[in-house]
Image 1 (cartoon, rainbow, N blue to C red):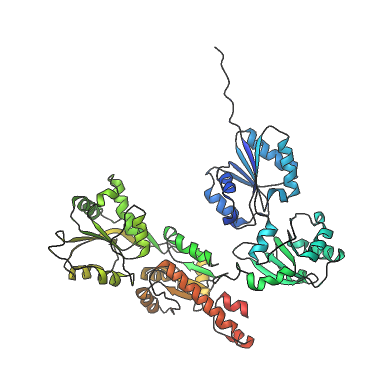
Image 2 (image 1 turned 120 degrees about the vertical axis):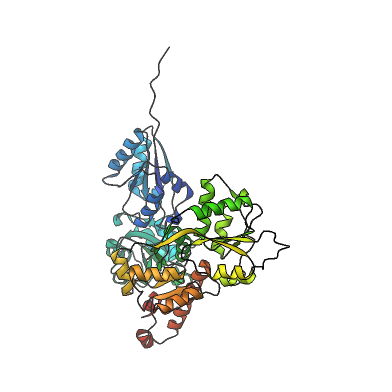
Amino acid sequence: MTTRTARKPAGRIAFVGAGPGDPELLTRRAHAALTDADQVVYDRGVPESLLTAIRSEAKEDAQFSPAEGAPGDVAKVLLSAAKSGLSAVHLVAGDPFGHESVVKEVQAVARTAVHFEVVPGLGQAEGVATYAGVPLPGVRVTADVGDVGALDFEALAAAALKGSFAVAVDAGDLAAVRDGLLAAGVEPGIPVAVTGDGTGETQYTTTSTVDSFVAAALGFTGRVVLTVGTDVAERDSMSWWENRPLYGWKVLVPRTKEQAGAMSARLRAYGAIPCEVPTIAVEPPRTPAQMERAVKGLVDGRYAWVVFTSVNAVRAVWEKFDEHGLDARHFGGVKIACIGEATADAVRAFGIQPELLPKGEQSSEGLLAEFSPHDEILDPVGRVLLPRADIATETLAAGLIERGWEVDDVTAYRTVRAAPPPAEIRDAIKSGGFDAVLFTSSSTVRNLVGIAGKPHARTVVAVIGPKTAETATEFGLRVDVQPQHASVPDLVEALASYAVELREKLAAMPAKQRRGSKVQGPTALRFR
């Protein structure tokens, strides 16, 4: 009998294009290669925000390191990892084949027996030009270069005569690019847009001409993209990324990380930079006996209704169900009411459709307005389960009792004040470092002021509903924004609408009045 020696698993190498910088512009194939990687070597042109997003989803033991040395040195690092049975990735800005050094690495790997692949990415120059609102129709030239000496200025000059071109270079090389373009015969007055932090949260574009763009881009650092040609004028009508309603606004989101996700995503879609600061920590009730009895009552048919007033209450009940090996089927015969859309979505996530959701105001009063009185004939079971926080108000329970229902008002979870945020966050809150703050409950107002201090007077205060507005006013805050309907999407939409109105108001002012205006926020600063 012949004994065979076990072979090491074969490793592999992927050269992955990161695209122009925005993590959401990674292709699905690039994302899969990165989350499966054991070792990631990245170029300095890859934005830190993208690296942070990748690290959050990568394998727990994945190693990240910057690419250093000549192409041959990087290739050796990748081959060493692959020969050890690991999956190695070289992550590059833009497209892998847009970099001469990466092409040389691929050639070096191709001479070995190691399996490799090249995952394309949108080029930096082309992608950032689109984010800057400059189209590159017809004849176009785009280039991502690390060495300005590699640029074909004659070809760029020809492209400038026929249309537009875009190049991605280091900000320190802008003067050399200007000199090369002028020497190649490009007209000094041709329009130029220079974009820094392309596709990022703080992307900024300045427009000028070939002979003046170096001075116009003073202060830009890192990789920048130049778009040159008559199409730069289209920015006036097509600049979409930097013209989103909340672009550049730093918005404080005083919610737990689990709750803040949907709100932060909506804020980012409008261009804001959200900062999540938990003001409340959710903990189990001190004595679990109430919840144990409530869960048993649900299974035994003790309740006609369960009324959920928060996502946390839904989560608390389902955690108890899970402890006892129960699932949605054990809600059979029990009707569910939810105080708001977010709470209803949490219920739907467990496979149950709520029977009642307020059509108007999403609050205790709004729910009570649509909750039917108890009828002994139609409702043989007359008891309602109300699992809530320990600090919940009595409005809902009292209203249900007035309608003839028996109410089991059960503490499903406790809310305690969270630890204070870092000193720099507290300082920013008190000094006006945030352009807006979004309050989703009275407790977020009380707890934020308690752990971090009162937001500065120039900070725009947006509240989800009238109760939250009352609490904010009690704490001496000026309420600027309140949506017609109390929901997170409507709250963010109302803040975005406020920003648009603010921009229009400032645009209509004479320049002297803008400088003297008391209107605050980044929109105001852009007009001054």
